[in-house]
Length: 478
Image (tube, rainbow, N blue to C red; front, side, top):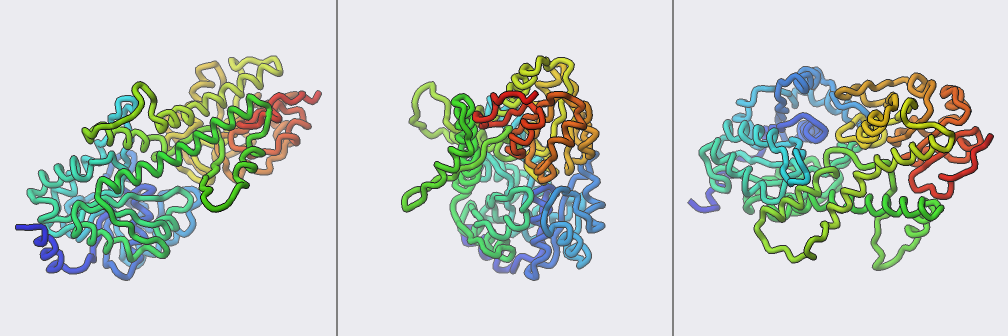
């Protein structure tokens, strides 16, 4: 047989009508809902393990309820719509993969130990084994998960072929089409962003284009090899992490020099014109989430396992890994700002009460994967602080009590620390907050530039803000 035989199988099979999506999370749910809403497809099956931690999603989704919280425009209504129309079902019965024409895997791929460049592919491997076990001829398998470059052609292909007894590119199609979504705009991102599609061959690429085109409203499809698609996804997140690290380091410089990083940012960003391309992002208390905190390591590992010859200065950190270290330092910097502020009013961390405002890693969301608030909290507790956490969107988090009542968390606090830029923290009244703290000189540490410093300083607060060298050593108003 030759490569054209897969095309013959697909031509005989006909258009994609039934789709499976493995993994009902921030990527899988909106993708499944949009595919189900398309008139092009008859049915979408969402596959979810009936585990103690995630099994509840199955019944919720089948009732037409979206288990994702936070502000996700249109998603709740769309899930309800496609379930009511009989276009979407969620199941833990992976044998039903045999019913579908295409199956997409949207499974998290964290790192067990970034320093050793060893990813935790356990969940992805299990998903691949389930897909391979029930694969039928002509089925398209698409990896949406962010993966180490080389995984589609390597580990994924091997597992699918072992489990199915078939050959990729001959009996079934295989591709990588990485998700490019951000919480808070999941549906819009899938519809409007360009779609990177990397098949292991042209037939696989074409079949993947057929799958995604019906749900795209503005974006275009950009075809390339599977490995190039893997590098594209890891590199775009790595570059964003690098840009954040650059502004974070600039913020630290501005603090040291006694100036306002936001003035400098405005000035740098004002230079426009032909040939000038820069993205000035914003400094903050740290980078969290599932993607930026680990995709640099996928890219680094991809180079390592490729066996290619890398020409790079001996003994020098990758600038991407160095950027990760800068961003990982920002919660430590928040801790240092907290320590400095307390010392200005003669207090120690030990015995102090700290109110953390915001546990999610991103504003107006319930996504609390790898939040920078966690290492900050751990440092405070190790120093002997009592720490209370408020978040209006995060319902719960392992071993952390999260309150949804701001006044309860702030009451009696020596320090108020803003870690997340939720809308609820804009326009907070300094007089009201001071009254709740019952302190003569409460501390406010602003990690997201949410408050206007002078209003708090005038009320007797000790203010510290990331990048606010112009205010961080202000006179304390007696």
